[in-house]
Amino acid sequence: MQWFVFNARGVFARCAIPQRGLCLAVVISFLVISSATARAEFAVGRAINIAQWFTWPRYESPGSGISWPPYRETPRPPNALELEALRKAGFETVRLPVDPGPFMVFQGERRDAVYGILFEAIRRIRTAGLNVIVDFHPNSRHAVWGQNAIVAGMEAPAFIAFANAVEEMARRLQASKHDNIAFELINEPRLKCKGAEQELWQRMMARLIERARAGSGTLPLIVTGACISTPEGLMALDPSGFGDRSNLIYTFHYYEPFTFSHQGAQFIPWPDKYLDEVPWPAGSRPIEQPLALIPDRVKAAAGLDEAARAKALTGAEANLRRFYTSGAGAALVQKRFADVRRWADGHGIAPKNIFIGEFGVWRKHANFPGARCEDRVHWLSDVRTAAEKEGFTWAYFNYDGPFGIVASDTDRTLDPAVLGALGMKRDGKCAGAGG
Image (tube, rainbow, N blue to C red):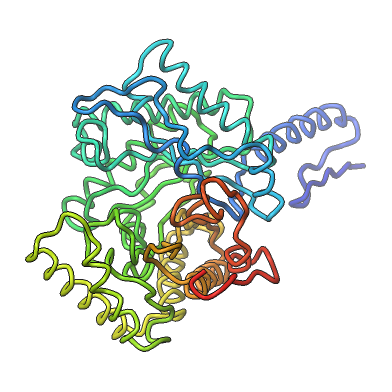
Protein backbone atom coordinates (compact mmCIF):
# COMPACT_ATOMS: atom_id res chain seq x y z
CA MET A 1 0.00 0.00 0.00
CA GLN A 2 1.18 3.51 -0.79
CA TRP A 3 0.40 6.83 0.86
CA PHE A 4 -0.03 9.93 -1.30
CA VAL A 5 0.73 13.39 0.08
CA PHE A 6 -0.82 16.33 -1.72
CA ASN A 7 -0.08 20.02 -1.77
CA ALA A 8 -1.66 22.92 -3.62
CA ARG A 9 0.26 22.01 -6.79
CA GLY A 10 -0.79 18.34 -6.81
CA VAL A 11 1.01 15.20 -5.63
CA PHE A 12 4.04 16.04 -3.53
CA ALA A 13 5.20 12.56 -2.55
CA ARG A 14 4.32 8.90 -2.81
CA CYS A 15 5.38 6.81 0.16
CA ALA A 16 5.03 3.21 1.23
CA ILE A 17 3.25 2.76 4.54
CA PRO A 18 6.39 1.64 6.44
CA GLN A 19 8.07 4.85 5.42
CA ARG A 20 5.33 7.16 6.67
CA GLY A 21 7.46 8.54 9.48
CA LEU A 22 10.22 9.56 7.10
CA CYS A 23 7.71 10.87 4.60
CA LEU A 24 5.97 12.92 7.30
CA ALA A 25 9.28 14.51 8.21
CA VAL A 26 9.83 15.44 4.57
CA VAL A 27 6.31 16.88 4.39
CA ILE A 28 6.83 18.94 7.53
CA SER A 29 10.11 20.27 6.16
CA PHE A 30 8.37 21.10 2.90
CA LEU A 31 5.62 22.98 4.73
CA VAL A 32 8.17 25.01 6.69
CA ILE A 33 10.05 25.90 3.49
CA SER A 34 6.79 26.69 1.68
CA SER A 35 5.70 28.92 4.53
CA ALA A 36 9.00 30.81 4.44
CA THR A 37 8.70 31.18 0.67
CA ALA A 38 5.15 32.46 1.00
CA ARG A 39 6.27 35.08 3.51
CA ALA A 40 9.02 36.15 1.12
CA GLU A 41 6.60 36.82 -1.75
CA PHE A 42 5.80 40.49 -2.18
CA ALA A 43 2.64 41.78 -3.82
CA VAL A 44 2.68 45.50 -4.58
CA GLY A 45 -1.05 45.88 -5.22
CA ARG A 46 -2.24 49.48 -5.16
CA ALA A 47 0.53 51.71 -3.86
CA ILE A 48 1.19 55.36 -3.06
CA ASN A 49 4.43 57.33 -2.84
CA ILE A 50 5.18 59.27 0.33
CA ALA A 51 8.07 61.10 -1.24
CA GLN A 52 8.89 64.01 1.05
CA TRP A 53 9.52 62.04 4.23
CA PHE A 54 13.12 61.00 3.46
CA THR A 55 14.10 62.66 0.19
CA TRP A 56 15.54 66.00 1.28
CA PRO A 57 18.44 65.51 3.70
CA ARG A 58 19.86 68.61 5.34
CA TYR A 59 22.92 68.76 3.10
CA GLU A 60 25.52 71.28 4.18
CA SER A 61 26.28 73.78 1.46
CA PRO A 62 28.96 73.95 0.27
CA GLY A 63 30.58 70.61 1.05
CA SER A 64 29.72 66.96 1.28
CA GLY A 65 28.53 66.83 4.86
CA ILE A 66 25.00 66.44 6.18
CA SER A 67 23.60 68.22 9.22
CA TRP A 68 22.10 66.29 12.11
CA PRO A 69 19.34 65.15 12.29
CA PRO A 70 19.66 64.33 8.60
CA TYR A 71 16.04 64.45 7.41
CA ARG A 72 13.64 67.36 7.55
CA GLU A 73 10.17 67.02 9.03
CA THR A 74 8.56 69.62 6.77
CA PRO A 75 6.01 68.80 5.58
CA ARG A 76 5.08 66.68 8.57
CA PRO A 77 5.19 62.93 7.85
CA PRO A 78 1.80 61.21 8.05
CA ASN A 79 0.82 60.05 11.52
CA ALA A 80 -0.70 56.69 12.47
CA LEU A 81 -4.29 57.75 11.76
CA GLU A 82 -3.33 59.21 8.37
CA LEU A 83 -1.49 56.05 7.39
CA GLU A 84 -4.47 53.98 8.47
CA ALA A 85 -6.70 56.22 6.35
CA LEU A 86 -4.62 55.29 3.30
CA ARG A 87 -5.14 51.59 4.01
CA LYS A 88 -8.86 52.05 4.57
CA ALA A 89 -9.11 53.96 1.29
CA GLY A 90 -7.74 50.91 -0.53
CA PHE A 91 -3.98 51.40 -0.71
CA GLU A 92 -1.92 48.30 0.05
CA THR A 93 1.67 49.52 -0.19
CA VAL A 94 3.72 52.65 0.49
CA ARG A 95 6.64 53.40 -1.80
CA LEU A 96 9.01 55.26 0.50
CA PRO A 97 11.70 57.21 -1.41
CA VAL A 98 14.85 57.53 0.73
CA ASP A 99 17.86 59.67 -0.15
CA PRO A 100 20.84 57.36 0.42
CA GLY A 101 23.23 60.22 1.23
CA PRO A 102 23.04 59.89 5.03
CA PHE A 103 23.63 56.13 4.78
CA MET A 104 26.79 56.85 2.77
CA VAL A 105 28.12 59.80 4.80
CA PHE A 106 27.56 58.85 8.45
CA GLN A 107 29.55 56.13 10.19
CA GLY A 108 29.31 54.19 13.44
CA GLU A 109 26.63 55.24 15.91
CA ARG A 110 25.36 58.01 13.63
CA ARG A 111 24.78 55.52 10.80
CA ASP A 112 22.98 53.18 13.20
CA ALA A 113 20.84 56.13 14.25
CA VAL A 114 19.94 56.90 10.61
CA TYR A 115 18.79 53.31 10.17
CA GLY A 116 16.83 53.67 13.40
CA ILE A 117 14.98 56.70 12.02
CA LEU A 118 14.12 54.85 8.81
CA PHE A 119 13.11 51.65 10.55
CA GLU A 120 10.82 53.54 12.91
CA ALA A 121 9.02 54.94 9.86
CA ILE A 122 8.78 51.42 8.41
CA ARG A 123 7.34 50.20 11.70
CA ARG A 124 4.66 52.91 11.60
CA ILE A 125 3.71 52.05 8.04
CA ARG A 126 3.59 48.30 8.71
CA THR A 127 1.56 48.87 11.89
CA ALA A 128 -1.04 50.58 9.70
CA GLY A 129 -1.26 47.37 7.65
CA LEU A 130 0.61 48.66 4.61
CA ASN A 131 3.48 46.97 2.77
CA VAL A 132 6.67 49.01 2.24
CA ILE A 133 8.96 49.60 -0.71
CA VAL A 134 12.20 51.24 0.41
CA ASP A 135 13.32 53.19 -2.66
CA PHE A 136 16.90 54.46 -2.77
CA HIS A 137 16.30 57.91 -4.26
CA PRO A 138 19.52 59.90 -4.84
CA ASN A 139 19.20 63.66 -4.95
CA SER A 140 19.89 64.69 -8.54
CA ARG A 141 21.16 68.14 -7.49
CA HIS A 142 23.92 67.16 -5.07
CA ALA A 143 27.37 67.19 -6.66
CA VAL A 144 29.07 64.72 -4.30
CA TRP A 145 26.45 62.12 -3.34
CA GLY A 146 23.81 62.81 -5.96
CA GLN A 147 22.47 60.91 -8.93
CA ASN A 148 25.01 62.21 -11.46
CA ALA A 149 27.97 61.35 -9.23
CA ILE A 150 26.62 57.84 -8.63
CA VAL A 151 26.16 56.98 -12.32
CA ALA A 152 29.52 58.46 -13.37
CA GLY A 153 31.03 54.99 -13.72
CA MET A 154 31.64 51.61 -12.11
CA GLU A 155 34.76 52.91 -10.37
CA ALA A 156 33.33 56.31 -9.41
CA PRO A 157 33.69 56.91 -5.65
CA ALA A 158 30.00 57.73 -5.30
CA PHE A 159 28.95 54.52 -7.07
CA ILE A 160 31.24 52.41 -4.89
CA ALA A 161 29.84 54.05 -1.74
CA PHE A 162 26.30 53.67 -3.08
CA ALA A 163 26.80 49.96 -3.86
CA ASN A 164 28.10 49.47 -0.31
CA ALA A 165 24.98 51.18 1.02
CA VAL A 166 22.78 48.94 -1.16
CA GLU A 167 24.33 45.80 0.32
CA GLU A 168 24.07 47.10 3.87
CA MET A 169 20.45 48.20 3.41
CA ALA A 170 19.53 44.77 2.01
CA ARG A 171 21.23 43.05 4.94
CA ARG A 172 19.55 45.23 7.54
CA LEU A 173 16.11 44.91 5.93
CA GLN A 174 16.55 41.14 5.87
CA ALA A 175 17.64 41.09 9.51
CA SER A 176 14.79 43.31 10.68
CA LYS A 177 11.63 41.87 12.16
CA HIS A 178 9.52 43.51 9.46
CA ASP A 179 7.93 41.45 6.71
CA ASN A 180 6.26 42.54 3.45
CA ILE A 181 9.14 44.81 2.48
CA ALA A 182 10.79 45.23 -0.92
CA PHE A 183 13.92 47.17 -1.82
CA GLU A 184 14.05 49.38 -4.93
CA LEU A 185 17.73 49.71 -5.74
CA ILE A 186 17.76 53.16 -7.36
CA ASN A 187 15.39 55.81 -8.65
CA GLU A 188 15.47 57.31 -12.17
CA PRO A 189 19.08 56.75 -13.32
CA ARG A 190 20.27 59.70 -15.36
CA LEU A 191 21.99 57.87 -18.18
CA LYS A 192 20.93 57.44 -21.79
CA CYS A 193 19.31 54.12 -22.67
CA LYS A 194 21.27 53.66 -25.91
CA GLY A 195 24.87 53.04 -26.84
CA ALA A 196 27.72 53.20 -24.36
CA GLU A 197 25.64 54.69 -21.55
CA GLN A 198 23.08 51.89 -21.80
CA GLU A 199 25.88 49.32 -21.72
CA LEU A 200 27.23 51.03 -18.62
CA TRP A 201 23.83 51.03 -16.93
CA GLN A 202 23.32 47.34 -17.71
CA ARG A 203 26.57 46.58 -15.86
CA MET A 204 25.74 48.94 -13.00
CA MET A 205 22.29 47.44 -12.50
CA ALA A 206 23.74 43.93 -12.50
CA ARG A 207 26.34 45.03 -9.92
CA LEU A 208 23.69 46.56 -7.66
CA ILE A 209 21.60 43.37 -7.83
CA GLU A 210 24.71 41.35 -6.99
CA ARG A 211 25.50 43.55 -4.01
CA ALA A 212 21.91 43.48 -2.77
CA ARG A 213 21.89 39.68 -3.03
CA ALA A 214 25.10 39.59 -1.00
CA GLY A 215 23.12 41.33 1.75
CA SER A 216 20.00 39.19 1.34
CA GLY A 217 19.32 36.19 -0.83
CA THR A 218 15.52 36.46 -0.54
CA LEU A 219 14.58 40.13 -0.20
CA PRO A 220 12.34 41.22 -3.12
CA LEU A 221 14.30 43.66 -5.29
CA ILE A 222 12.96 46.28 -7.70
CA VAL A 223 15.13 47.19 -10.68
CA THR A 224 14.81 49.88 -13.33
CA GLY A 225 16.21 51.11 -16.62
CA ALA A 226 18.14 54.22 -17.58
CA CYS A 227 16.60 57.28 -19.30
CA ILE A 228 15.19 58.35 -15.92
CA SER A 229 13.15 55.14 -15.49
CA THR A 230 11.08 55.71 -18.63
CA PRO A 231 9.44 52.82 -20.52
CA GLU A 232 12.30 53.05 -23.06
CA GLY A 233 14.82 52.67 -20.26
CA LEU A 234 13.14 49.54 -18.93
CA MET A 235 12.78 47.97 -22.38
CA ALA A 236 16.48 48.57 -23.07
CA LEU A 237 17.43 46.28 -20.18
CA ASP A 238 18.48 42.68 -20.77
CA PRO A 239 17.19 40.80 -17.70
CA SER A 240 19.09 37.66 -18.72
CA GLY A 241 22.22 39.37 -17.40
CA PHE A 242 20.84 39.56 -13.85
CA GLY A 243 21.55 35.98 -12.75
CA ASP A 244 18.85 34.47 -10.54
CA ARG A 245 15.77 36.52 -11.43
CA SER A 246 13.47 35.12 -8.76
CA ASN A 247 12.04 37.85 -6.54
CA LEU A 248 12.83 40.60 -9.07
CA ILE A 249 10.27 43.28 -9.91
CA TYR A 250 10.78 45.65 -12.85
CA THR A 251 9.71 49.28 -12.65
CA PHE A 252 9.19 52.29 -14.89
CA HIS A 253 7.66 55.72 -14.33
CA TYR A 254 4.96 57.30 -16.44
CA TYR A 255 4.39 61.04 -16.86
CA GLU A 256 3.52 61.18 -20.56
CA PRO A 257 2.86 63.55 -22.16
CA PHE A 258 5.17 65.66 -20.01
CA THR A 259 3.55 68.85 -21.33
CA PHE A 260 0.33 67.74 -19.66
CA SER A 261 1.58 66.09 -16.46
CA HIS A 262 4.10 68.83 -15.57
CA GLN A 263 2.23 71.92 -16.73
CA GLY A 264 2.91 74.71 -14.25
CA ALA A 265 5.61 72.77 -12.36
CA GLN A 266 8.05 75.46 -11.31
CA PHE A 267 10.93 73.11 -10.50
CA ILE A 268 11.44 71.98 -14.12
CA PRO A 269 13.75 73.88 -16.52
CA TRP A 270 11.50 73.50 -19.59
CA PRO A 271 8.90 75.99 -20.81
CA ASP A 272 6.03 73.65 -19.84
CA LYS A 273 6.36 75.36 -16.44
CA TYR A 274 4.55 78.36 -17.96
CA LEU A 275 1.54 76.32 -19.11
CA ASP A 276 -1.79 76.27 -17.31
CA GLU A 277 -5.12 74.46 -17.71
CA VAL A 278 -3.86 72.23 -20.53
CA PRO A 279 -6.68 69.71 -21.16
CA TRP A 280 -6.76 65.93 -21.33
CA PRO A 281 -7.21 64.44 -23.85
CA ALA A 282 -5.37 66.83 -26.17
CA GLY A 283 -7.81 69.03 -28.03
CA SER A 284 -10.74 68.49 -25.68
CA ARG A 285 -10.91 72.27 -25.25
CA PRO A 286 -9.98 74.93 -27.83
CA ILE A 287 -6.26 75.68 -27.83
CA GLU A 288 -7.03 79.39 -27.55
CA GLN A 289 -7.98 78.89 -23.89
CA PRO A 290 -4.60 77.66 -22.56
CA LEU A 291 -2.74 79.84 -25.08
CA ALA A 292 -4.34 82.93 -23.57
CA LEU A 293 -2.97 82.07 -20.12
CA ILE A 294 0.69 81.79 -21.11
CA PRO A 295 1.61 85.51 -21.27
CA ASP A 296 0.51 86.15 -17.69
CA ARG A 297 2.37 83.09 -16.44
CA VAL A 298 5.57 84.20 -18.15
CA LYS A 299 5.10 87.76 -16.88
CA ALA A 300 4.73 86.47 -13.30
CA ALA A 301 7.99 84.49 -13.46
CA ALA A 302 10.80 85.99 -11.40
CA GLY A 303 14.37 86.47 -12.57
CA LEU A 304 13.77 86.66 -16.34
CA ASP A 305 15.05 89.48 -18.48
CA GLU A 306 13.22 90.55 -21.62
CA ALA A 307 15.05 88.11 -23.90
CA ALA A 308 14.44 85.22 -21.51
CA ARG A 309 10.74 86.09 -21.29
CA ALA A 310 10.43 86.12 -25.07
CA LYS A 311 12.14 82.72 -25.25
CA ALA A 312 9.90 81.32 -22.51
CA LEU A 313 6.77 82.56 -24.25
CA THR A 314 7.80 81.09 -27.61
CA GLY A 315 8.83 77.77 -26.06
CA ALA A 316 5.63 77.36 -24.05
CA GLU A 317 3.44 78.12 -27.06
CA ALA A 318 5.41 75.69 -29.24
CA ASN A 319 5.12 72.88 -26.69
CA LEU A 320 1.40 73.48 -26.31
CA ARG A 321 0.81 73.39 -30.06
CA ARG A 322 2.88 70.23 -30.36
CA PHE A 323 0.76 68.62 -27.64
CA TYR A 324 -2.48 69.53 -29.41
CA THR A 325 -1.17 68.24 -32.73
CA SER A 326 -0.25 64.89 -31.12
CA GLY A 327 -3.88 64.06 -30.37
CA ALA A 328 -2.69 62.38 -27.16
CA GLY A 329 -5.34 60.46 -25.25
CA ALA A 330 -6.11 57.07 -23.75
CA ALA A 331 -4.93 55.25 -26.88
CA LEU A 332 -1.40 56.65 -26.39
CA VAL A 333 -1.24 55.29 -22.84
CA GLN A 334 -2.56 51.91 -23.92
CA LYS A 335 0.01 51.62 -26.69
CA ARG A 336 2.90 52.52 -24.40
CA PHE A 337 1.88 49.92 -21.83
CA ALA A 338 1.26 47.29 -24.51
CA ASP A 339 4.86 47.84 -25.67
CA VAL A 340 6.14 47.20 -22.14
CA ARG A 341 3.95 44.11 -21.87
CA ARG A 342 5.45 42.69 -25.08
CA TRP A 343 8.93 43.31 -23.69
CA ALA A 344 8.00 41.54 -20.46
CA ASP A 345 6.46 38.59 -22.30
CA GLY A 346 9.55 38.28 -24.44
CA HIS A 347 11.71 37.93 -21.32
CA GLY A 348 9.37 35.61 -19.44
CA ILE A 349 8.42 38.27 -16.88
CA ALA A 350 4.96 37.95 -15.36
CA PRO A 351 2.82 41.11 -15.76
CA LYS A 352 2.36 41.30 -11.98
CA ASN A 353 6.12 41.88 -11.75
CA ILE A 354 5.90 45.06 -13.85
CA PHE A 355 5.46 48.01 -11.52
CA ILE A 356 4.65 51.60 -12.52
CA GLY A 357 6.50 53.18 -9.62
CA GLU A 358 5.31 56.75 -10.23
CA PHE A 359 2.52 58.45 -12.16
CA GLY A 360 0.80 61.72 -11.39
CA VAL A 361 -0.16 65.21 -12.53
CA TRP A 362 0.77 68.66 -11.18
CA ARG A 363 -2.53 70.06 -9.94
CA LYS A 364 -3.96 73.55 -10.23
CA HIS A 365 -4.59 75.12 -6.85
CA ALA A 366 -5.38 78.63 -5.65
CA ASN A 367 -3.72 81.03 -8.09
CA PHE A 368 -0.97 78.63 -9.11
CA PRO A 369 -0.91 77.00 -12.57
CA GLY A 370 -1.53 73.33 -13.21
CA ALA A 371 -4.06 70.84 -14.52
CA ARG A 372 -7.74 71.27 -13.80
CA CYS A 373 -9.21 68.60 -11.56
CA GLU A 374 -11.38 67.09 -14.30
CA ASP A 375 -8.41 66.77 -16.68
CA ARG A 376 -6.11 65.44 -13.98
CA VAL A 377 -8.46 62.68 -12.88
CA HIS A 378 -9.24 61.77 -16.50
CA TRP A 379 -5.52 61.18 -17.16
CA LEU A 380 -5.09 59.29 -13.87
CA SER A 381 -8.02 57.05 -14.74
CA ASP A 382 -6.66 56.38 -18.22
CA VAL A 383 -3.25 55.41 -16.82
CA ARG A 384 -4.62 53.25 -14.02
CA THR A 385 -7.08 51.49 -16.35
CA ALA A 386 -4.39 50.77 -18.96
CA ALA A 387 -2.01 49.47 -16.29
CA GLU A 388 -4.57 47.11 -14.83
CA LYS A 389 -5.57 45.90 -18.29
CA GLU A 390 -1.97 44.74 -18.80
CA GLY A 391 -1.77 43.26 -15.31
CA PHE A 392 0.76 45.83 -14.02
CA THR A 393 0.86 47.13 -10.47
CA TRP A 394 1.25 50.84 -9.75
CA ALA A 395 2.10 53.54 -7.22
CA TYR A 396 0.37 56.89 -7.36
CA PHE A 397 2.61 59.94 -7.02
CA ASN A 398 2.25 61.51 -4.48
CA TYR A 399 0.83 61.71 -0.96
CA ASP A 400 1.37 65.46 -0.51
CA GLY A 401 2.70 68.48 -2.40
CA PRO A 402 1.52 69.72 -5.83
CA PHE A 403 1.06 66.13 -7.09
CA GLY A 404 -0.63 65.15 -3.83
CA ILE A 405 -3.72 63.21 -2.95
CA VAL A 406 -4.23 65.17 0.28
CA ALA A 407 -5.85 68.60 0.27
CA SER A 408 -2.78 70.39 1.68
CA ASP A 409 0.14 70.03 4.07
CA THR A 410 -2.18 70.89 6.94
CA ASP A 411 -5.41 69.26 5.70
CA ARG A 412 -4.79 65.55 5.18
CA THR A 413 -8.22 64.81 3.73
CA LEU A 414 -7.87 62.40 0.80
CA ASP A 415 -9.11 63.82 -2.50
CA PRO A 416 -12.27 61.87 -3.46
CA ALA A 417 -11.79 62.68 -7.15
CA VAL A 418 -8.31 61.13 -7.18
CA LEU A 419 -9.57 58.11 -5.25
CA GLY A 420 -12.30 57.74 -7.86
CA ALA A 421 -9.77 57.90 -10.70
CA LEU A 422 -7.73 55.21 -8.96
CA GLY A 423 -10.76 52.93 -8.75
CA MET A 424 -11.10 53.24 -4.97
CA LYS A 425 -14.24 55.35 -4.68
CA ARG A 426 -17.38 55.05 -6.79
CA ASP A 427 -18.71 58.56 -6.26
CA GLY A 428 -15.38 60.40 -6.39
CA LYS A 429 -15.91 63.66 -8.24
CA CYS A 430 -14.17 67.01 -8.57
CA ALA A 431 -15.38 69.68 -6.20
CA GLY A 432 -15.60 72.18 -9.07
CA ALA A 433 -13.97 73.35 -12.27
CA GLY A 434 -10.25 73.71 -11.71
CA GLY A 435 -10.71 72.12 -8.27
